[in-house]
Image (tube, helix red, strand yellow):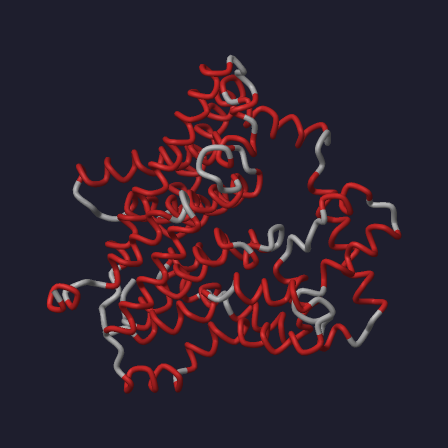
Length: 399
């Protein structure tokens, strides 16, 4: 039996974790525990020491370590400890992935992930129709939040980011010099994931998707004419699809109406949060250096919401919704720097050498401007896992 265990590959265990991530946080936590036990089983002290000496490990774990350090001056130790627990993958996954002797096979891992996101969307789609036919309510199951939260228990914005990363991978496969049969397969998969993103109707993912297509058109086109040809075809398809989905998708329609009419203006909601954070920082200039302490931002934000009569924000206990402002407010300038350090893929050389990693980093950098995804399991586990895998793949000399 021990011999069989030794034949296990970390790529399959990571793939399994990504396979179940959209469906169950509890199972995902168990899968990470299995990855950790596998790592312990194959543990070699020399590799461990080498990792502790490597700058890569400290680059990716410094944010988490400083988050722990900032507990010493927090005003809410309970909330701070909760954040430490939720962010533990920021330390554990770099330690495991950088020290494992198994060769990282991103193509193998992505096969698990692509299957997971496709099945998750199809299940959400079927679940919404099942709810419609069983209750007679043709609107509620297709509302923006209900579509994924009622079926697989994940925020639609976060699930849309999973689909975005799927598009990044399949789009590259579509434009590479693959045999025609394989190229058609990847093009169809790309179309499926793009349509899935549009159907859900997350505004942030919609704009990130456009940016991704533009980057791919620039990167893989040999002539300016080709760039305009690809972009023109994409935007024509986008307009036709959007019109079609506006007719059939209640979730998509409400998102468009809310965006155009301001009926539910979550852009202004975010701006009010950011202004409140800046007010807090300006009232305490030293906080720019050291922050208020891990987990201390929300209690202080609630005071500002109450002061300025932001009733909606106060009742919903809205947190930062911005990983950079939150890091600055809780851990000061050092926290902000360690947060920016997580986005190694933003280096311009990756645009040519490894565009998947570049666009992954760009996508989550933009997502981090409107969501505090490092505070949620659906966000931090997914981001950390792929972020470190991409970098380890780069260190191994692979694209």
